[in-house]
Length: 219
Image (tube, rainbow, N blue to C red; front, top):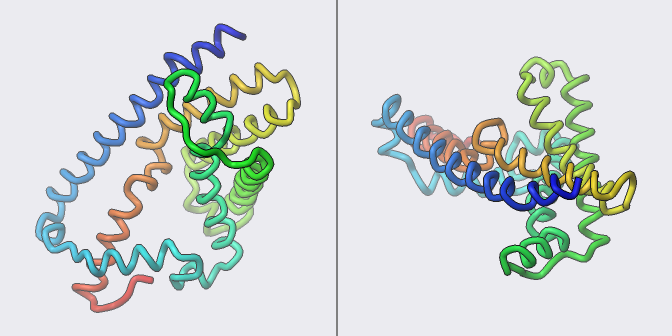
């Protein structure tokens, strides 16, 4: 198990970061080429004022009609995404690893707060699982890769919580947590997690069409 842990925090970590960075560049370039091929005229007239106003409304809790119509989903979605970004970046354990192997460090969250935020992510995953199983319109648009993405995110944070609380074999749980995190990183450019890369662009595209062509708001 020690050998697998060393492999996970060493070569596999570098490989995961490389696939994430190169895969993201490839997907962004591919999507740009496809947009130019399919709708070059409209792409040339992207309206940044409309795009920025739309993005500001959609990244503000209850700033768009869709958010206001579903307050429960809105609260869980914003909590989920904030914790999903904040915890991996500012967890003491992650920063210590980076400092040990690469000499990189920055201020960390208090352990108790990071633990609470991680549990929020696990609870949010359980909520999204419940919605996909029980809400007909959500279940209708759910595909097999949606289950995979949800399982990957949930497993990454759940194993982190279990490792922090030393539930189960600590080395096994920590190694599993690292491997799940690396799998999630690799999955970002190639699964629904890619909305982390494309979300702002697609929002800007839609906002430009609504604002410049239909003279309407998209929020």
